[in-house]
Image (tube, rainbow, N blue to C red; front, side, top):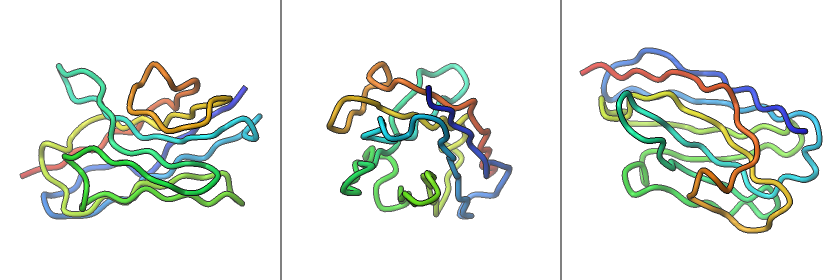
Length: 125
């Protein structure tokens, strides 16, 4: 089993920055990809970004590319999402997810095996 705990959400103004963290514990040696997803009220959960645990390769949704940066610290088993130039449309609950046993990144939430509890990000205009 893998446990994921997110932190760093909050209320900010448009144009501000936030950094989310996701700490993984348990059988982390099975993890190949870490991802961030978000879900806004009344909308489906959507892919935000992912990173390979091994080589650090990344993938971003078009809506956040150039503003958000995903990174990892293998020694701390932690993944980060640096969010800059935040917009009101970035308001959502942000979830950290881990894809285990399968090599390769994914933008599909059903291909992730473990999920955190989520952290709220609210961007006011």
